[in-house]
Length: 209
Image (cartoon, rainbow, N blue to C red; front, top):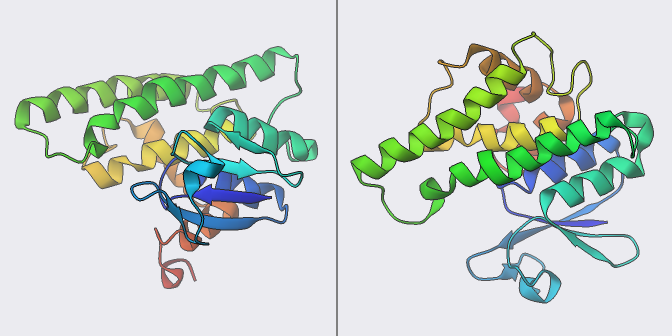
């Protein structure tokens, strides 16, 4: 398999998942601005939508959109427990969270990555929009569960962690959400997450050695 990714972008969730399942894979860093891949290819010939992630399967098929990519990967290694069995209520709960992260939390960060400076009024509104979505995560963790689905780390946590980690880049402090802050620390300590962040250049090797 090959993952087309951009460091720190939402594709990092698929990168974490690949490291969690221990499957062999290649990485191809992609510049979504120029549409060029590190290997020299034209990314839009691989993924016409032009954004990551794009997963090329062993059979040569291309899968895009995080919820689809993450569930496909988790289903390749059912023993890892990264996704409940298809057709169960638990799987529906997983999809519920994946869709919330994709359509609500992820989208709320959009203004910060628009490529234009935010005026004060726009920034205040954008921060409030992000805060409302983090409130939902905080409520989900209100019973002190370690992960979003309960006791077991899942692909929902991989995706939520990546998006919530963007708070570090846009200057939003997680202090008002103590359960979410502790949750982020828990996920960040997972070996697969550490390995991914080092590979993508978000954490220096010496910081985790």
